[in-house]
Image (cartoon, rainbow, N blue to C red):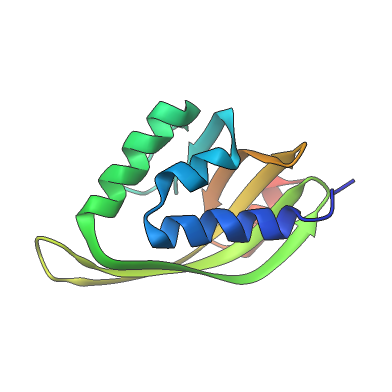
Amino acid sequence: MMQPGNVELVREIIHALNRGDVEAMLARMDPDFEWRPLEHSPIAGNYRGHEDVRRYVEDWLSTFDDLRVELEEPSAVGDHVVVVVRGHGRGRASGIELYNRFCQVWTLRRGRAVRMEEYATRDQGLAALR
C-alpha cells in the first residue's frame, strides 16, 4: 500500500526541477532511479542512476529558458503516483515557446522515487499499471 507522503515526494522533486536544483531532485531518488521519457520524444531512451539522470536533466534544463513543469491531478495508486504534467518553456537558442501535456507514473519505495515513466495520456499511464 502507498506510504503517506508519496504525492508530496513527487511534488518536491518537481519543485526542485523547476528551481533547477538537480541535487535536491537526486536526493529524493534511489541511486538506481530509472527515468523513461515519452516514447516518441527526440530524447527517448532509458536513463538509469544518478549520473545518467543528472546528465539528462542538466542537458534538458540548459536547452530552455523559463522552463516550468506544473502538476495536475496527482493521485496515488498503490506505491505509484500518477500525475498529468504541463510543461512550458522557451527554447534558449530558437526562442520558440513550448507547451506540452503528458502523464508521468512514478514508482516510490521506502520514501524514495525508484522509477518514472512518461506516457502521452493519463489513460495510458493508468493502463500501464494494470
